Image 1 (cartoon, rainbow, N blue to C red):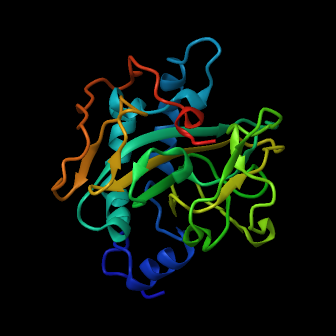
Image 2: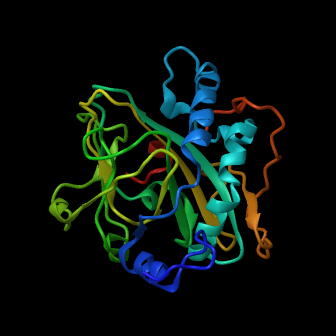
Amino acid sequence: MSTPTNSYHLTADQQKFYHENGYLLGLPPIYTQAEMAKINAELPNLLALLKPGESSKDIREWHETSTYLYEIAMNPKILDLVEGILGANFYFWASNFFIKEPHNASTVGWHQDAYYWPMAPHNSVTVWLAFDDVDEVNGGMKLLPGSHRGGIIKHKRSTQTSSVLTLELEDGSDFKADNAVQFRLKAGECSLHDDRAIHGSPANPSDRRRAGLTIRYSGTNVKNDLAVNPNFKVYLCHGVDEFKLNPSGPIPTARYGRPNFKPVSNEEAGKG
């Protein structure tokens, strides 16, 4: 691939690869090792706000009340990358931690993000920011290249699963897991993937934590169904919101905080 003038502005080759395959790796680091160490040092302050019975996966949409997360989502380097996919006008609307502690048996079953989201049209990008080095040893994500071009596949609801998601692709769905690409990221690096790309991750049997923050960005032409997710709020990242289809959220002022509402879960929003 050719080298861009600004390394956070995607080249035509990178854009082509993304649109054909539904993901992008090999991007320049968002944060240096020293910067990532400081971010990780603050994470316990957020985890301390969890209530009994909750886990890190319950830290959803806390960017609405935490400048700690809001500033990450609004990092200009990330926004430059996303602009290369969504164009000049886009917002962010979700953030969620996926932390697998060492020797954690939890998996994330094969799924498509778009199946869970009451949003249309499909014009969204997920940024997966690695808080730790992530690879096949500690449960790194896998994705099926080109699967975003096959439409939305029916998901099934399952209670007999180690997956943190209870909606997964139905057995017999026409995809081959052997074709999946293994994501490998260093702490401070990120990946991009399409909301329709089929992906998942195995358990973490290693001695290393595997932590990542997902941030969801959508073009301003994407509308959320407030009847399903009434607390949905958007934060304009770039350009102008010429459609004004969704309510805007207030910029947080506290360093750490949790919303005073419980975000709609993926299962509640899903159609399975």
